[in-house]
Amino acid sequence: MRIALISSSFAPYIGGVEEHTRQVADHLLAEGHEVEVWTVDRGEHLGELRMGGVPIRYLPTPLPARRLPSLVHFATSQPRAWRAWTRAWREFRPQVLHVQCFGPNGLYALALHARRRTPLVLSSHGETFTDDHGVFDQSRLLNSGLRRAGRAAAAVTGCSSLVVRDLAAHFGIAEAIVVPNGVDLGPDRGGEAHRPAAWPAGPTILAVGRLERVKGFDLLLRAFAAMPRPGGANLIIAGTGSQLEDLRCLADHLGVADRVVFAGRMTPEEVASAMSAATVVAVPSRMEAFGIVVLEAWRSGRPLVATSRGGPGTLVTDDVDGLLVDPDDCGAFAAALHRVVADERLARRLGAAGRRTVEKYTWDAAVDKYVAIYGEAVSRRATPRRGRVPRRSAPR
Image (cartoon, rainbow, N blue to C red; front, side):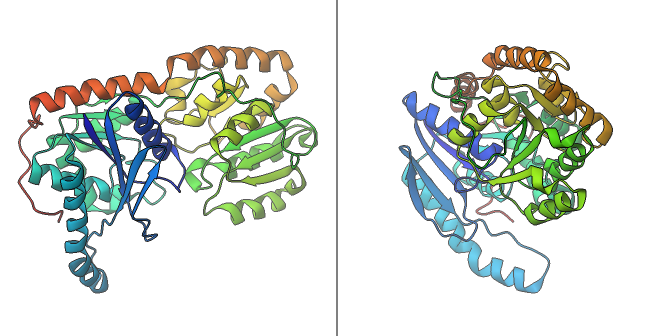
């Protein structure tokens, strides 16, 4: 089959949807399917690239706004954008349009579906409730577009049961199924333990992710500062984002700056290696749709302390393959971190259990589910499940 994976974001950006899309594209290609990634051009004008054998198209996705300059910009840029999307369709002729994380990309994919009748598949990654800016609460265009896409799609999936419940409760999409994230369990993917030279000596708490408010790194810093004898452990925070300088200032304010390392962006290989060298991996998110970092921690065999809010609470069995904690409860969070750092037997037990649990989460399993969905969608020719979406030549 020919599959267009239409992602809200992709490389050079990093995150859950970017990793999910990349892995799905690579595995589809390895299985003999033709696949392209179409993603949002954020102004870099990267055009068309190829990564690992997969063609990547960065497409413009202007949307209207209330302010007059924005409306003028949309009026002048939208025809060119629509031509770019229709050219991508003509050149590749996809049999399925698979939206990964609904945003402006989803609106243009929906318009292509309406115009070309190409089957539409929609996969949600928690974008409806994990966005720091509450975009689906503020944008009636995106809100109504997601509802329409849910009605038009041949199938809708969510990366966790939490995401599926949110789609039903707030967008009227009642038939979504869970297709979880995966992790590469190949023999070379566990990561050989390598302690970076920049890490200070002693026990190490490692956290990885985008440095944004929803990820809760400020909560982790407060819990770290409240740990008993915090000088006995160090905190490594890997990632980039808009909150970096605020987090540096907070570490200084809490008096722990000399025990905190902001390691910057890491490659997947560096993440795997760092996790294998860490004493404990922490996931402090205020809300998490799934949490690929949970799978990465389990794969490394290291103990996990994770947020009880959102996806990790549906994956982790508390005190079996990780410790679950409300990250807003600073005392409880600090106690959980200290408990794992101080109890080597507990750390080994949690790490070993996580390594067994992660065997259930593979990219092969996720792609097998998608391929079955594609096959059914193509055979049905994308007959909408409830009603029909009016034909439109472009998103409004």
